Length: 278
Image (cartoon, rainbow, N blue to C red; front, side, top):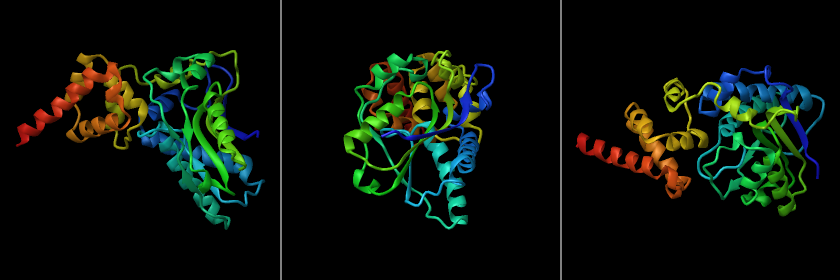
């Protein structure tokens, strides 16, 4: 089965992406204002580029990129994509979308964006994706992701599709896609960290008014050096600390050795502040 692939922006060279690199970087670290912008743009682009001329009569199911407990940045973009798409569907007398989740079983500390195509496949090759096959029967599937660099995740999705024997019409939708394969895949990390150079740069996103946690920001905070972590943490609210801790546990990050010291400090900090309040 060959899925229909759509990407809003085609990356041909490293100087011009079709979108602001700073925006993309903030999006990857939880800026929901940018997620809103990207999601609406992707929906509008796909409507104009495909749906206006190609009637989809089946129920549409939108599926964000796979995650375990903490959603990825794509999940936030998906929310706004769905809202924008639903408005168009209702205006044209069609069914609003449903949603499903691809469950993944493995978490890792490596920064995916800096890896080569070969190393990406090695890293996620032992992962396994799971979905509710019965719920999807007879429906058209839209798999969303923010960027396609080497196609490794798409290959894993299609591997899951084959293993489950899915016969659905499948669309792979991306906000951006690297189409010049002379460019090294680590261009993704250039985009990821274009605005965020240290853990202290996160404050403009976290305190910007529309922040949402995702896997990247949780891993980034837990993986920073201990001194920076302690300083950063003292600047955050108790609500932020509690969310960070609960999300880390939910993704089993307490089992990853390099996160242990920071997580232990976070736990003790929360306990000490609780006693101070009492």
